[in-house]
Image (cartoon, rainbow, N blue to C red):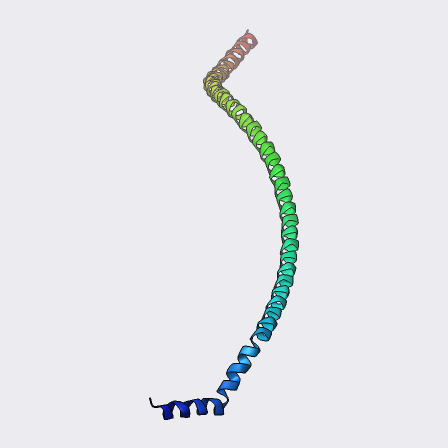
Length: 164
């Protein structure tokens, strides 16, 4: 570059206001930094306040959840206690019913044996009665025959006495 070109370049920079802008920015640099720090501090304060409010809300929600959970745990514990008691009662009832069923089964078996024995006895008695009925029928026929013969004999005896 030639000196003429360099001079022209310097005049263009100074004439365009770039030099003013550069000087102005150097002069206001401290002010801009101070304002930036102030804005950043305010933003941090707002963020901290927002964080504090959020933390308070979270703490309240956690307390509420803890209270509700505690109540639910207590209710569930009470329900489990009632169910355990009911289960014990039902197990006792089942034990009693099983014992009763065993006793009933033994009674049924005994009664079935007795029933079978009595059926055998009834059959034997029916057979004996049937045999006795046959004997009675035979005896009735024999009595009828004898009565008929006796009647015939008596009639003959009476005629013989009448003839005499």
